[in-house]
Image 1 (cartoon, one colour):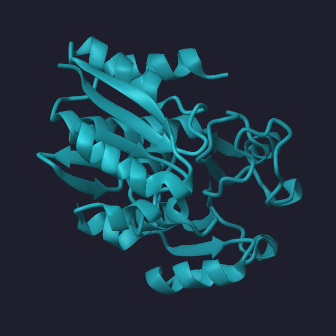
Image 2: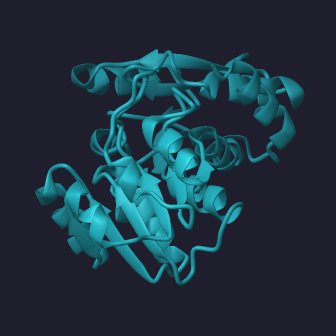
Length: 268
């Protein structure tokens, strides 16, 4: 019997998770299919009932469901509780279990380019993805963390939880960070791009990480490259959290090269 997994998001069709995980299933001869589940926020409760009824084995959870799904699950682990967001769900003999691997995606992507310990980090955004980024920075002993968001009240709320600094996007010019993590959904599926931080404030001493991979070269990545900064595009985040999720669902070692090839072959 073919097991069913899928990406839960709205919109969902831009996601490369199905290509990545289906390639892994095929390589390891696992009888499973990873599907698209494009579910509107108002239909989430009904969809979770479907997951239980049809015994869907696992979900990769993306925007806008990472926080709202929590109340429909049977249990979430300590990491997901701290981050207050779930990006992976496992159906464990009828019990829906939630965890968060986004922080691993952030951590491992950054460590390929730079140390995090002792660095000044700016996180753009104040939602579930931003919380995972702050969690990763804290866990790796960043020197200072600043959460900047368009709605400062949301940044303040997240900063209070992690005991770090906060402000609006305009405050970026006064920080001079070592690491910048773009954790908003601004610019997703937008080829023109959205400017959060003016190009003139990005410098070659920075490492700039993007969590969006559609499009691959977002406005902040384009501007950071022009400034001579080191850049990390969003597919690295996708892959590193995907590796962890695959192990969580299947209890098998992920075929990294196969998954990477599938992602890069499908990137636009």
